Length: 104
Image 1 (cartoon, rainbow, N blue to C red):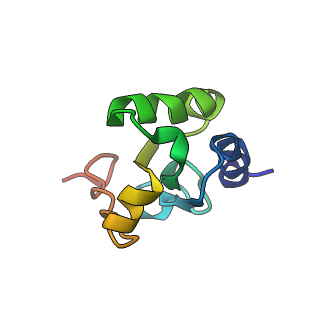
Image 2 (cartoon, helix red, strand yellow; image 1 turned 90 degrees about the vertical axis):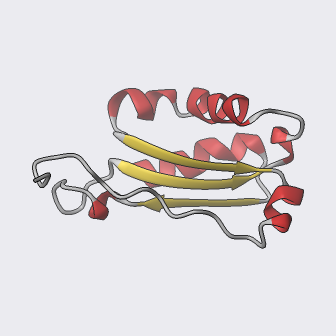
C-alpha cells in the first residue's frame, strides 16, 4: 500500500462524507514519484463543534506514523458537511513551495 492509500484508509475512521487525498509532491523539489507532500480535504461530522486546531490534531493523531516517517508536508482542509456546502465544495490552493535546493 502506498502512502496516499494508507492516508485514505486511516482517515475512514472519521466517517467522511467526502475525502480527497492529493499527492502534491510534484510541486516540490523532490525526486519523481515521491510521496512526501499531501493535501487532504476531509468533510466529516466528527468535526462538529471543534475548532480548527482540534480538527487538525485529530487528523495528525490518526496519521502519526506517516507524519513521523514519510510525510514532509500536509495541508489540511477539515470541514463539516455544512461548512463544505457553504464553501460550494471549494478549498484554497496549497501554498507554493519556497524551500529546497531550488530556492534562489
